Length: 481
Ligand code: SF4
Image (cartoon, rainbow, N blue to C red; front, top):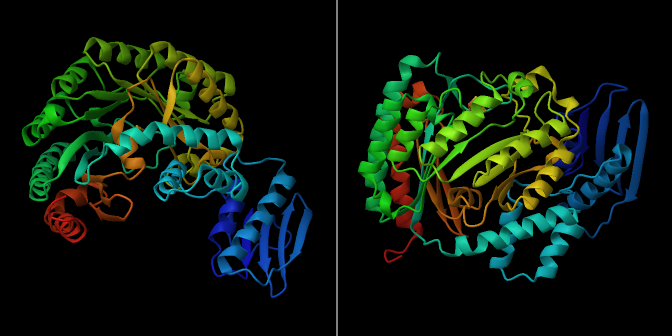
C-alpha cells in the first residue's frame, strides 16, 4: 500500500490516518494500478480515494474556503478516515487521535480548567475516540491526579540503563546487545555507569533536586552477574538516601538470567519493586520470539522472587505476538493473574523497523490483537486490578495502547512520572535520555551516547552535555522553589 497526499502544507495528519489502517504503507507516488490511499486538495475540492484489490473508491467534497490550513487538514483527514472505515469495515478504537499520551491530554485540559463536556467532545466528537477508550483514559487520569498533585517542582527520578540481554527477542527494537557479543564490555560498562551515577548525585545536589524514584531498566539488568549487580546497587545506595526514596524498581526481566542469588542481591540492595516479564506463558510463543526459556522457568522465577522477599512485582504481557492466539493469550493472562503480582502491564505488539518481525514481514497474521486487549481489560478488572497508566507507540498493532494495571495502592510512580512528564528524569547509561521538566511549561532533553562502546569512550563529552541540567534549572526555576 502507498500513501499519496498532495496540496497541504503539512501531510502529517493525513498520513497518520492512512497508517491507522495500513501501518506499513510507504509515502510517495504509486506505480500504475498499485494499491494506494490518496488525498488531494485543489483550489476548490478535497478528494479522498482508495484503490484496493483492483477497486477504486472515491469521495469528493467542495473545499470550504473559510478554513485555515490546519482546519483544512483536519476536515480532509476526517473525510479520509470515514472512507477508510467504510472500505476496510474497521473502526480504530482511538479514532483519529495522534500522540502517545492520551491521558496527558486530559491532565493538560484540566490544568486549563476546561469543562468535562468539552474534554469529552474533543475526544469523542472531534477525534472519534470510542466510549470504551475515552472512559479508560478518564479513569486513569482520575487515578493519577492525586499522585501527580504531590509532585514538587524540584523532584526528579533516576533512570539507569543496562543495554545487555541474554539473547535478542524477535520483536525487540531497543538498543540492546547480547551478553555473548558484549562480554568484554560489560565490566567496563558497570564501572562507567558507577562514575556517571556519582556525577548525577553531584548535579542533583548542586541544583537542590529531591530524588523520588529510581528505575534500573534495560535491556535486562539481570544480565549482569550477581557481583556486578551488587556493585551497581551499592553505588546507588552510597550516592543517594534510599530511605527518602518513594520507590526503587529493578527490571528482573527474563528468567534465563535471573536466579535466586540475583533476586536476593536486588532485595538487599534496597529495591522495593521488581518486574518479571513473561510476555507470554506459551512455550510455543516463547520459542517464536526467540526466548531461550520456558513458561515453567517464569513461574519458578516468580516463586524465587517471593522467596527472596519481593512484595511488589510487575509482570508484562504482550498482545499480538507471533504464533499467539486469543485463547493462548487468555491462558497466559489467567496464568499471570493466578500468581497475583501487584502490577500487570499489557502491551500491544509494536512493529518498529529495528525488530526482526518487521524485517521478516510476519505481522499481517496478528489480527486478533484488539480482542486480546479487550479481554485483558475485562479479566483484570474482574480480578481486582485497575488501570493506572497508559501510552501508545507508533507502529502498534491496530494503533492500540499499552496499559499498566495495579492492585489498589501499588501504582508504579515512575511509570506515571515518565509517561505524564511530571518531573525531571536524570538518566545514566548508554541510550539514556535525560528529560528536564518544568511541569506544564518546559521540557528539554539531553542524550547520552546510544551504544555501549560509544558510551565508554564518550564519558567526557556526556559530562559536558549534562551541564545543560544546571543551565535548565538556572534559567527556568526560581532560586527559592
Ligand atoms: S528482553 Fe527486552 S530489551 Fe532484551 S532483547 Fe528482549 S525485548 Fe529487547
